[in-house]
Amino acid sequence: MGYTNLAYVLAAILFILGLKKLSSPKTARSGNTIASVGMLIAIVATVVSFELLDFKLIAVGMIIGTIIGATFAIRVEMTQMPQMVAIFNGFGGGASALVATAEFFSKYGTPEQTTFLTGIIILSVFVGTLTFTGSFIAFGKLQGFVSGKPIVFGGQQLINGLLVVALVAMGIYTTYGSSMDMNMFYGVLIVAAILGITLTIPIGGADMPVVISLLNSYSGIAAAATGFVLMNNGLIISGALVGASGLILTNIMCKGMNRSLANVVFGAVGLEQETAGDETQRISVKSSTTEEAAMILDAADKVIVVPGYGLAVAQAQYAVREVADQLESMGKKILYAIHPVAGRMPGHMNVLLAEANVPYEQLKDLDEINPEFDDCDVAIVLGANDVVNPAARHDTSSPIYGMPILDVDKSRTVIVNKRTMNPGFAGIQNELFGFDNTIMVFGDAKDMLTTLHKDLKEL
Image: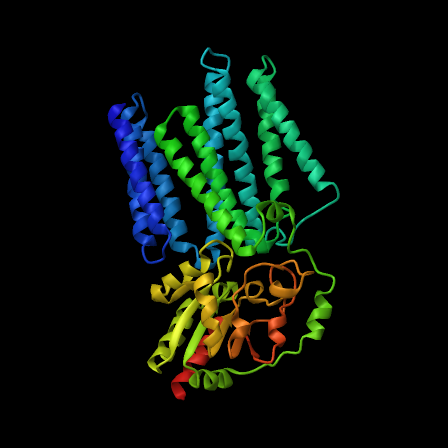
């Protein structure tokens, strides 16, 4: 056991180093590798420390898991990465709940079924099951199986409150009860599953980055609780790290939207706005062509690219890199503005641009890039909407009021690429589109950028 704990300490050090490197796009890949090595050490140490294990069954599980993981890694497109992360969060929570459930059944009615053990099992089952169902609702919203708009109904919060009270009551009864605690345990499973659904369906698409990071934290908490169930230090450490890092990331996401976590979970941002149609009519946009955009860029010295979910949908990361390379060959300074909640998961834009080998030093976060817009000649907005909406600064009636935005409107010229004039996830129109210094180039981002690159080469 002593060598096993030493292996867990080494694994924990590698986990921490890996998380540290994940904080920067430049070192993220090596961080992922380091953390993976740490997990391999923890797994090997755990397997070696236990006797009477069925190694054939373990090997079969590893082979199946490897095949599934490799298939996802190869086949899943970058635009589907948020959905995959949501599924992985769900599987993590579900695995914790299954292990805790198995431990409850094996210890049920024996002297080993202590109050502490039962209480920790209930916590693990509750958080794990809630994470499982909540993550798959998030997956459905991202994939389009479930409406991306908040699904709300009368008395929803009251129902959720009653479910929580019932869950606590059944958990306490299971922990301290006697003959009926097995039925109460089933009740905990069912209510936790329902609560995961009812807590997630009111959350709109605009809040998906926060929800994903929060569910990731839940999966870590469930794993840590299961570690206490099994008295496995490696699982406790890894679960605690995931839970803590997920909460930190959730806090960063909330700050990026200038909203509290409670407001994200219960605020239902993304409901249809009654005035959305009127706003569309009031905004007078100037539609332009790639030829005109190319001439504007030719006269510019400093260009800032603002990627959004439209870029991800069109898989235009390689096309934007080609345009940027062409502009750099013409002597232009190129920067990329990354909003913390752009896209559908934390770091979505960083991952896409890193895939296209965009230089890391050109990627600037919100605080770094906003002062750069004051002397920016052209800002190219590619499928971003709410994160560049000036209404966040002055319109107190707007659901995004107070959210930190990218100050693209301060550029001399703003070139906005969108497929349509449909509003963003928050369900409101963007007043930026009607500004005097803004021109709209409609169409698929990849097609537009490919044509723009051709036009720039012909200048």
